[in-house]
Image 1 (tube, helix red, strand yellow):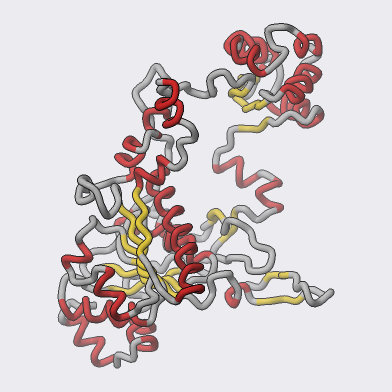
Image 2 (cartoon, rainbow, N blue to C red):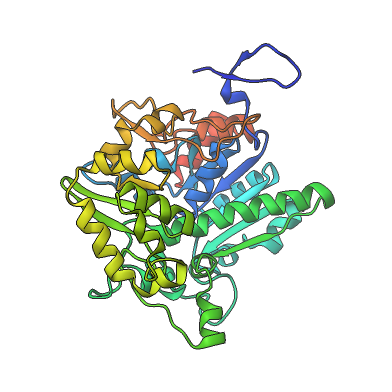
Length: 412
């Protein structure tokens, strides 16, 4: 597949192979671990050109190969653009092979329980002797230090500890899951950010370092002013459902054919909403005249708007909101995304070739870069050890006969 990319030093546009581009082209990462918190970091790096070598144990595939609703469709996303090899890190020969890979790599990514790599003789102090420029990215529930660091940690627990679960859902129900493994994905995203920061430092000094990304701290980083609100005023935020208290109007409102979101909490935008509703006098009503007043009368204002929206179809309301420049939108499902013209125009969702699934669509690379765009070159390999011959043979120079012996011994 080829795509057009503009060149600053030429007026004409040239056709280029996206596989030869990417801001991280020329870098190599070894990805250890499984599930989401580590591998999503690897996906982000691979999307932008890093050669990511995913390691699975010969007798234990990544569970993500089996996850998904109705079909195992999570694996092609989280392992896209990656090369997959098998390697037994619990035996010395496997550990020695990993050290050879480390010598040829820029990053090592792992999300084992802290202490596991050290138990195998693969801690950073050992690996940096082999490659002083190595950047070791470590993702875990609680971080590599502290009294709880050695505990088993999953994304859900990190979301609870970081404060997110306390705020997710309606106040009439127990704390909710938001429908995604957001704690894992946040930890992986911050791990990717840390890797790029460490890469910048290495560019200047030549030295590598450890990136320590904890799930609970990654969630905590997104918690806005929750902590200072408590320490300064004693206020503890609680679940509020679809609203942000004292910020109005900003809510989901009913129409004849489903709910839509309207956000008109800024004074000027609220005035435009009043015009769209045919109620311009509301903008100067003392109850709604400014941010504070609207917040104090949030419930009655939401009821007033809902009484108006439920008399119309969703599209009628959305058209009026567009006409008056009021932020509003449908609450999208995957089906809505596939039909939406904005998604199509920006190729936010793309079709990827796959030997098993003929309708494999997935989210495209984000963010979009004008000069060095990322690209999905292939979906995750369906077979374990798909790239053993390439990595062990071409990269490390191990002959086919030696590879066969290692396979028979359970090393690869």
